[in-house]
Length: 193
Image 1: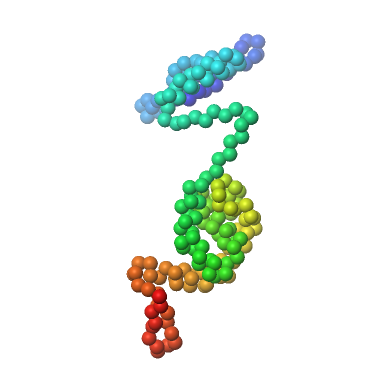
Image 2: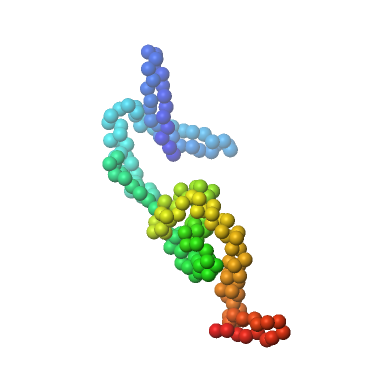
């Protein structure tokens, strides 16, 4: 069901707009609309109050909650769930690897933003930068748009060090064995703690 505006032209040329409650039904494979009732003229000052009462009564049976805000109230909503989950994983996985590879802190924050954006709301770099203002508590205030592009260049330059750091940190992830430090050719491996 939905509310539809129905316009009618009078003989004098004026146009009157009525609000109708309409439902869609499928009849023989085709969608048909049926007017359930006419709510009244759109320019009737009493109609707004009547519709408000109707909505507040119907809200008791609806599954969704409504937020009623007047024009003087400013509502700011921010996301924080993705940052809480990915922030913890970041500090256990890729964050230390980037620090070990001497990755600049500001660019590491930009990489974190790009990965978080890819997980939560995949968009372009520019749109991800705009989205960063909607993330609560992540500290993206100091990250600029050009940092996202510079971070990609830095990732390419330090690719080998990052891959080696990742391997060194996570090679025993599934085996349960301790890391092995190799000596010169021909000598036996030394197990480190």
